[in-house]
Length: 249
Image 1 (cartoon, rainbow, N blue to C red):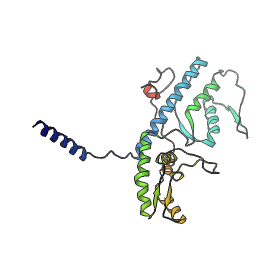
Image 2: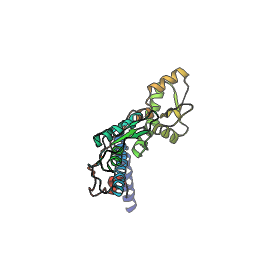
Image 3: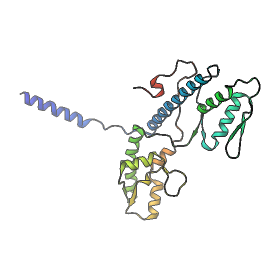
Image 4: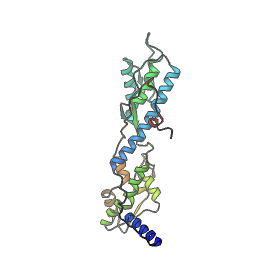
């Protein structure tokens, strides 16, 4: 009797497991949220380090709470930072030479010695250059890419009568997430097609497939800059917790 009861219980467990819904596939919104958390934690660490540096070298400095303002294009970052410093100091701070060197003007009489360096540090956390080379690839993003490579992309390729071949899935995931330099290209490329190939199709049709089917690398590039959503943060505000900075257990 006991054996029958145990067998019945085991069968019931198996039946329930068989009816369990498969794990949900992460959405692009979930990838965005994960990237936002990653960049927010990185920004909080940078802001905390900046605050500590200012308090160590210029304890007499007075300045508003540190904040993130916006992302800037990499080519415009230097000019944006100089403009930010001008705004903080309420005066022209310097000029940028054709070679990209900032030539700061002499400090006006009566301006504190800490004013310029503190303004530079503040602008370094207010304006951040977006390059697309940030260390993403968290668990959610990895799972989303793997689903694209094993389900969505193969289905699309088969509709064209071709076969998708990915010899190394991990390499294809990396190619989709991390920009890499390929061949003689100066700019980095982020595409699954660096690690995947098409079979049973001619060159013209292969080009059409690559343009029409969802390349997860191209999709991730189009997400653009991650949103930075820090909590209130400022000098002498009691510091940050380990959870806020991304440190600790």
